[in-house]
Amino acid sequence: MSLIAGSYEKFIWGYKLRQPKTTTSTDQTLTLTPQFSYAAHVSPIKSVAVAGVVAASSAGDDTVKLYDLSTSSELGSLLLETSVNSLSFFTPPSLSSFPRNLFAAADDGSFSIFDVDPFVLLQTIQVHKKGINHLCVHPSGKLALTVGRDSCFAMVNLVRGRRSYNCRLEKEANIVEYCSDGGRFFMASDEKITVHEAEDAKIVGEFECSKRVLCAASGESGLIFTGGEDRAITAWDTVSGKIAYSIEDAHKSRVKGIVVLSRDVNSGAAEDPFLLASASSDGVIRVWDVRMTNKEKSKPLSEANTKSRLTCLAGSSIKSLKKLQLKKDTLEKNAVEMEES
Image 1: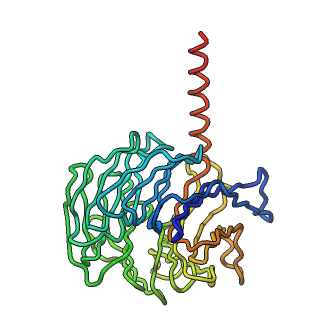
Image 2: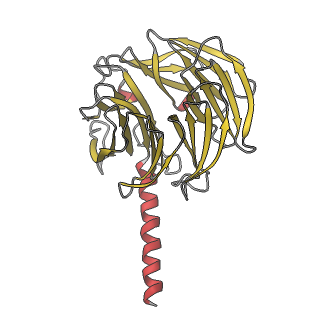
Image 3: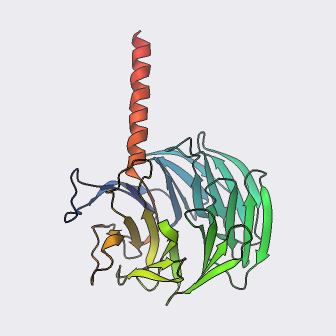
């Protein structure tokens, strides 16, 4: 598994989470190995995204950059007219390791669609009157949701390339995410989380956190993971409407990023651990096995200290990386054989 983090010091950090070849129920040792780190932007990094072997980053310098994780190299950079606050990839089922599109939510309220290969800007849509705080893409790749500083919630039709719905919220939201099945989505506004039906945006659940929520991610079986100023990681059960479990004092400072490193359902490996990664503004990245949360004092399986002020976190399965690397090696071998013949 790969983890990518951005920092206030303009650095982007790449790590690989390596599992031992033989893992028992009593030995869950994991190693968070540094993959790369360098000054990617000339201003603090606002957002990072990962899909397969491709990663992207954005900052206040009005640029969006693309990276190849298999070679730890930069694929390209595009200069926009405004800074981008949120990034998200879309990968069709037929392309299990390489994304097709990258979507960006900007500080001027615009929504941009990029083609990943080649890395070009396809279209820009004006969605909000003020800056967009966050975006998410439906698993089908046909719809995207956004929330902005104009206290509005909007839906973007990605097939037609236009805004299809817009409504005023009671309070400005800073996070919007689809649940794992795509049938529901949730929004975070300060300490409050609301769960909505995807079809008509009807509220079907509400949760109240102790302090402001700064990051969130959807998990399996209707779980929503949140982190923020309370320095804890909380799992909310949308079915029962209660807290499923919580990792208290997960970090010494506020939690700025959460990634659910879910199992590869196509691998058939039932023994894969249920992993969750978190990043804090104190510079520490930690990986947890959520099955261990029932213990009195949960301990991370692995951690790394970047010694920087982290602002965001994204992750990808290492199995996808291996599959694409094998495919790449096969293509290169076939090309050599064709040249020799």
